[in-house]
Image (cartoon, rainbow over all chains, first blue to last red; front, side, top):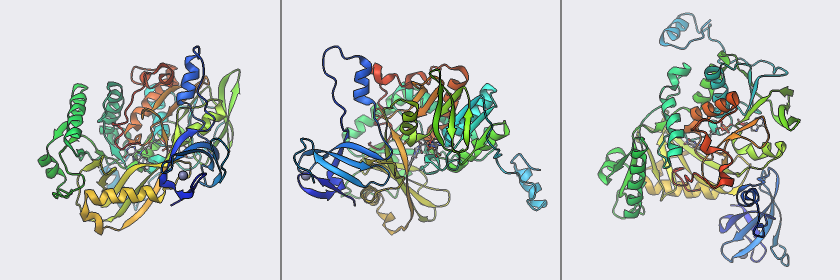
Length: 88
Length: 417
Ligand SMILES: Cc1cc2nc3c(=O)[nH]c(=O)nc-3n(C[C@H](O)[C@H](O)[C@H](O)COP(=O)(O)OP(=O)(O)OC[C@H]3O[C@@H](n4cnc5c(N)ncnc54)[C@H](O)[C@@H]3O)c2cc1C
Ligand SMILES: [Zn+2]
């Protein structure tokens, strides 16, 4: 069992966490957003082999946070609350 | 020299001391250019090369594989072949694959050991039975064989299932497809490789694509660990690594890569002669021809390129297995492994031109593309040869994500993901 660092609770079992997508995938704003931009936001993913910046949620406490991880070794590189104030 | 496999050639080689067998495929040095290049020597890539030669008479073709052929998901999968999908588009696609599978051993002169032992998807409540009936109706309307099973029918095909009154997932019935079954995964890769090689295709192993040659906005070749190789038409079928190559070609795909794991027990005497899937337990099981119990389940829930399984998912799968078949508590596990699968939001593949002209896609099969290999190969070959979709591949184009015409087979893909 791998431990992931929740910025609020500290290291917890991987099974308590849920993956929430690429970090930095901002929702397009405005009424005249072209269709391709919506498709990009909704569906296209970077899916990197190596270092990834991802949104995760710790389901037990509800904390959403950004985790930097290596997708080949599964090593956690950093974890920070979305607001940036707690860093584990 | 023996090139055709038959009972007669077996007999002849027996008398000749097995001295006349030839390697099943040639391993030539790569040429500087081809009419077409296929990236990825899994089932889909090899089948593409075979159908390019056979259906379209294009024989100046190279399959470029970074490791050994069949070493990706094709050689790691649990080999279930079926076509019990819901939407008409999927039925056309998987139905074509299923029909081609039925004639494949003969067509390739290679025994792919297709065993149509039938498969039952269990229903564990009255609600699931209602959905089951809807699925069976849809399949029958679409011309795919399907039957709604009663609990007694399930008991008949899988008597060792846990029918005890206190079972966590009692059986209310199931969705039966009699033509479903299993095939030998390596044989599918090797059979296509051998047949393609005999038609003139070059199969190049240990040849990793590191970049694309892009000139005038068009893909004109690839850089590889064995030098530059040019072609005006390039198809890629690299499963879990599709996003990695797409990034080199300058675009993104609607794909996340995850590990999907499986395991097998020690071989035992015949005890299960069908494929059983329990959505409740999150597990599907069959028995291989060697006697091993082959066990599959859901995805590891962490995006990954690690090509190994994680313990929590394995524990969940084994727990589900023992709930389904308490008798398997006596088994010893022999091997456990994982493949990196390309998961798409609507659980349907992507077949069609890529945003880079000259480069075509066959990916997004996720947890279920072994059953589709003959169709994936036929359709990518058609695209490479004609530059156009046919009516079967058209709905699976990448443009469905912008148009919103998704083909959501979350249920048809079998195990939740
Ligand atoms: C555990 C498991 C169980 C499964 N069970 C089933 C099942 O029961 N039924 C079913 O229908 N499907 C199943 N699947 C899914 C199925 O295995 C895949 O969808 C299918 O094999 C994909 O075939 P492919 O040829 O596209 O990919 P692969 O067989 O993965 O081939 C892709 C090839 O591309 C090569 N490659 C990658 N990058 C490069 C590069 N840069 N240069 C050159 N080559 C490269 C890889 O080495 C690999 O050999 C399962 C998968 C797994 C992992
Ligand atoms: Zn927490």
